[in-house]
Length: 552
Image (cartoon, rainbow, N blue to C red):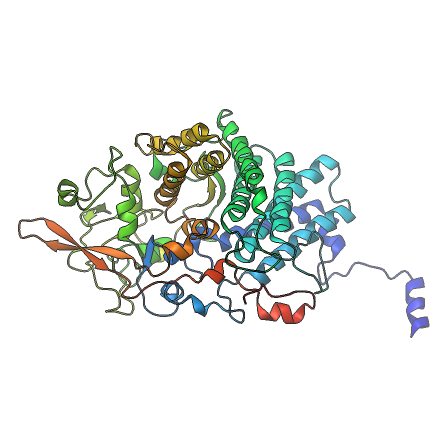
């Protein structure tokens, strides 16, 4: 047999197969290599509209105090089940399952980096660095999610074909991500032509770098090994100041681009979510009918829009109350004037985010008191498809989409936008002794909303203001749950709590009073061991060097 093989080799039958893709087919052709890389952007769709980990848009915010999912059944109501019973998260069934898909993404990206290097796909170092920067940006994006979930993961910078790799420390993981993003920021272009919209830019790299360092700094400051004794999880507290500074520096690099006309806050908040590729969007994922769409309008519109769908999740009273009055006063039901007209004279973001009793929508007034869109008590119907809080979602819904069942939805998903970068800077600057600069960045976000400057006078008050702004500015964008986790406040805010609603009750004079109602009917819980999600048991069984995170 050996001699036969040698004989075949001497006949020079080393030809490229025509029935499948080979390395030379992909990496020997620059256009094929580019298409391979562009395909990796699909990972953004995995996390669009806060759908991770459950698979439904807004499901991440439904694990917090911002959204209440209306169903009691598995599937449409899975977010409720996790919120009520986090013990359902196990190593056998982690629920927050991205490990296998994440490493498929990482393998594909590493394959691109290795293959294009090996086959000299790109004609010059400038072009190679440009495309390698794009690939490393995407690798960093994937790793950011894995580390947010597990803390300590396996770091791979080459396509690995064996399954014999240990976890790295969480600190090393954050630095690995940051190194990829620093490389990306160095070589990516500041802008791209319209035909390349959606692809990573220098601003996207700096924006994701700012987010990365903010997470790392938060773990360094707030974790303090209180919730997990695994030697590889956590970040040394001594590094918090340096990491906050890194976050501020990266955010500042994005802010500097505003002076070049690259990024800006749009004058009108609501325009951000309906104007594709606008100057506030730093990293977005675009949809195009009919080939690539999503279902936000179908799943979250008030039920009169689509009677057999809609109202999967609705805003909570806690979120509605968080929006200030137009003059910056805190809204309070204890104020008789405010309580008499609770939806008048609220800040602009309230009206762009929430549909309330009496709100105008698609040529009608929303009526959450009675009728087809009226309030129902949570739990009285398994799939009510109507509000259980007295509110409906407005943000991201397309008021011009009159047949969402047929048309589906094509609103752009905004992964990073300029307002978030300003809030990152506000937080990071405050933590590094730059209170004035931090407050100015926060006030810039407030000013766009038509609000007066924050009254914060010290770091503690500014941090409270940052948390408030991240709630109202970034509502339904999937940040709240991860913020509470990185601040190590989830076990404080989400444990033994319930979300509420405001049920309209006719006052007999043509108006309404609003009754505070329990929209959960049981306590929510947050298990502190879930600050680090367990690794899937199957991965540990298949990898001799992979150990489970302690506590699982």
